[in-house]
Image (tube, rainbow, N blue to C red; front, top):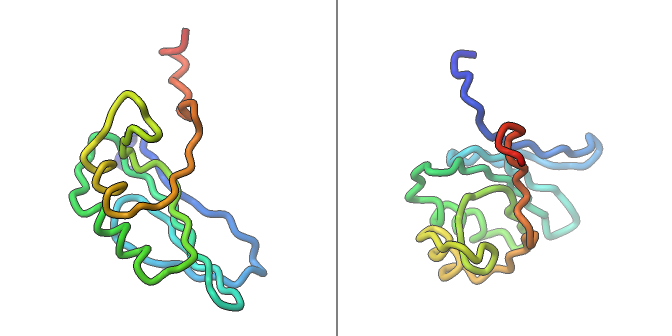
Length: 121
């Protein structure tokens, strides 16, 4: 390990007897699986986009994932800001995603990030 910079990461835990397969997508840090069922299948994608990183194709990539999947959950920390879930700011990526998708967004009212012990008061 040469890079000791703290980073995010993703993982999905699933029981062995549940029939599933990984979906390989080469964007950001992500883990995506499809759980096989008596139709339709269920796709679960967990993403992490570090803050202040450029990902110009993020919205298009998310739309590609959703395009042919009727049952799909996308979750994680996309670091996209939109007034619906963050009243203090609105980012271009968050605005584009909301405008182009029209999906239901479920998020907590309070921030989920716990500050570093040094910064806590």
